[in-house]
Length: 209
Image 1: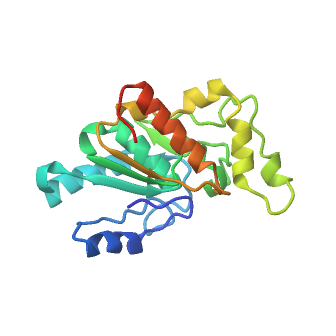
Image 2: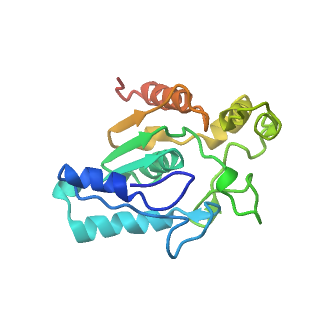
């Protein structure tokens, strides 16, 4: 279980899975004991280590390990499924992202909201705001109330080159993917992101429904 931009450890959702007979690990990666207060520059090897630990210590039947995450955690589980397909047996994304995002509002002030969120093999992953020709924070910073973070992200999605650079390569996932989205999502356009994922899977010849 991986939380979103609020950080912390999602023990209630892990407990819900456990109540149905699933061994569940709620893993904190920022705003958790011993971890950074910020999502900025989070090394994906941290999750790789956790996945190896799960396989080695819990020894799940047939090596089946599912990833479940919400919002930024939904982005993260798709990303891990694409980068570490041999370790992931299923992906569940609640209101997920379809692209790699910058640190945004969970950022370290020293690197800012346009700094990287994820580091892999020592390199920051290309993200949506990087070299983006249309992106603007104005709808969030200056827009009328109630302000919606999603409106700023929609400006960034108008640059197709930036979107392609930041796109999560979901076609590399070797596991079933379940996405749950919200049509009135003020944080980011999760239903649009869900369609982007399913369209890419379909284009790659992977059955969707």
